[in-house]
Amino acid sequence: MSTSALLETRNLSCIRNDRHLFENLTISLEPGRILVVEGPNGCGKTSLLRILTGLRLADGGEVLWRGEPIGQQAADYYEQVNYVGHHDGVKNELSCIENLRLARAMGIPSNVGLDEILEQVNLYAYGDSDVASLSAGQKRRLALSRLLATESLLWILDEPFTSLDKDSMKLFGGLFEQHLQRGGIIVMTSHHDISLPQQALTRLKLGQQV
Amino acid sequence: MNNRLSLSQAFVFLLRRDLLVALRNRAEYAMPILFFVLVITLFPLAIGPVPELLSRIAPGIVWVAALLAAMLSLDSIFRSDFDDGSLEQILLSPHPVAVLVLAKVCAHWLVTGLPLLIAAPLLGQMLGMPQQALPTLLLTILIATPVLSLIGAIGVALTVGLRKGGIILSLLVLPLYVPVLIFAASAVDNAAAGFDVSAQLTMLLAFLFLSLSLSPWATAAALRMSAS
Image (tube, rainbow over all chains, first blue to last red; front, side, top):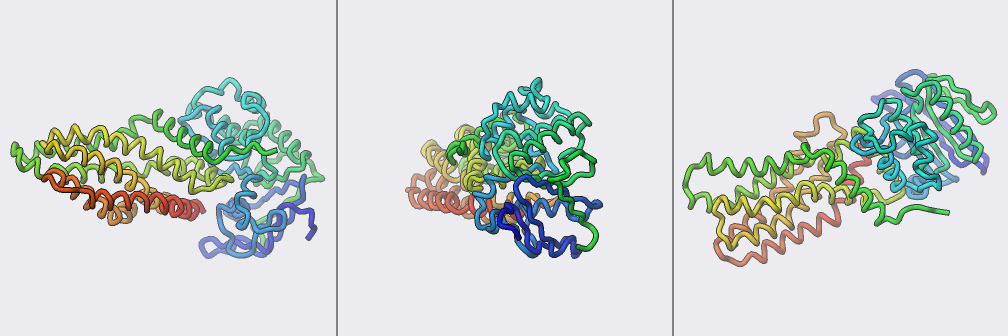
């Protein structure tokens, strides 16, 4: 156990519907690392991610941030976490800009302008349109653009590339790389093959007994 | 370097956002007030032209209708946020969740409780409620409808994760609504008869402060359970 690790788990286990999804899972992530969780459907990828965010409680073991259990420093931890889950977490009734503004109010706003962010994710032309009129892929891009609108070290992403086209996948792959270079950490699940910097990459296979 | 918004700013932001969503979803949020007006207008038609009887039972009718209208609107506090994942984002905010919850409940009250305040005196008049009871009617609605929203929020937070939470929700919150109904209706009733109502109003105020101080915490804890 190195002291430089930001995010660690100790003997994490998760039980769902009487099935042991994983047991004694120990992970340790230093700044600049990306963890890709892989495995068949229903193997506990999403559960693991939700445990890392603290939305779900682990059935055993603990999650540590800077060496302290996350439950004991919730406010400090949540300043550092950005989670894009299965649901996009954007409001259909609001415009893209309004959604991003709200995301900023709920976290630590970054110094990048909102227009600039929308331009980066190719949604600039849709800034003022209601999210309800966007396609699934565009909504996903808006959800992922929250990562840029707020300042956070740890990105937890559940299938971030769902309904994205090839160009957008490449675009966000690049943004992920920049985040890693800045010393950020990414934990994600993905069924897609994307090019990620090999030296920073850790793969975790769930589904076979650990 | 920390640009984090102050808590009050975040509160106002979430409140404004919920009001904006309600404004753009007018039809859905007009349901409770429409229900309130319809139920009350149906009573004279069903009971018949007996002014003494109507004016005698007017306080009860108005309050039962207000309570049911409040219950009808409860689910909308957290439902859409739960379904689209916004709730997760709120729970993962570094701000205290209880305060953010309070912002949402405030918005909900402004959208569903405040219209009752405007409609109630008119409907009271229509039922022939005595003039001297109208100020008390307004006061009870002003004090007690926030209590309904605050208590209801706990119930919704507990049931929002269930597939068919509607029935459980009504069973859960109705017993807690009954004391509010008893004191509010009794206040209006006594005012109509020309008695002093300070005891009932004080009791309602006590309910308000109690729920204001306890409900956000309970709601936040219940939301965490529902989201996991």
